[in-house]
Image (cartoon, rainbow, N blue to C red; front, side, top):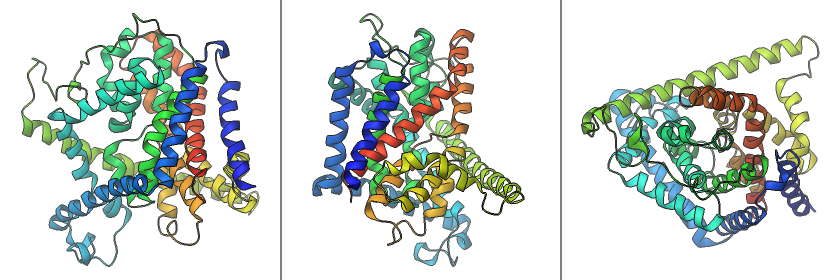
Length: 419
């Protein structure tokens, strides 16, 4: 029965994308069907076959190994923040130490892979392969892969030349896709709080669902002469093809580049920590105010009611669906780190069924929330002209809808194969 509900949920999420489509007649149904089948096959492979499970487990173990290596640097500077099993003296590690400080190693590592050209090469050819298989425009396919490694604002920044040369309708597609991204450099933090195998499974599933959802919500016909990938330029050209370059076109010295990367990682840690502290505090403030009217009222309860139907369609019983809906709502209003912090100590216990554990982890693995819309709009404002930016600003609702539907679809599809 619950499996049937889960299947119904996937159909409903797709139907919602169709219902809110800007131009139903232009939807590329052949491409949508191909990507959906590919998505189902990947989810089945990664969750139901030992080789698929070994692949994602190996990738998750790799990120965990990186995090453990990062602890060696933390121990040198802050030994009382790290537990004895990693060389420190702390009784336990807090959120900053266990999840955020390792970013100081992971971000520079990915930036080095970018500097020497390995990561851009992978992005370029996987994007081209995806375009060939799915029939989607080349740059949209390229961007869907790029944003999953680099993040939304970073991927947009390195694509400045392409954004300036494309029609505003295609730029809106990219803005909507950007709601569903993560960055590879932050996966290590995720895998310390929630099951790594499902985090890694969510990455390719989200890429494909971003293509499906944006193709349905904002279908744009791209003529062959438009279907090109411009040479990536701008101050962040390194992240696209050739490594960091200075204004005179020469490659930036490696240690100068590495220093900037480390400082950028430090800023990222401060941004995440500040957002988590502020959002948790603001949510607590709202709860205190709501309690003045009724002791039962809380932000989680309200959001749980709103998101309940969508949570139930994941194939959950009523009780579990209400709890899941609260996590969904909290993530959309705050961010994924807030929810991951709440469930980190219990998600791998018997308190969560395998199905619940899988769909919750997959749903959380994206940047889809209200604050992300502001980041994307701000990034476009600094790149494209006023007409393009106004179209994106007018479609904040579609951006949010895109991010939510991708998260729902990804969780629903993975949930079909984990019980």
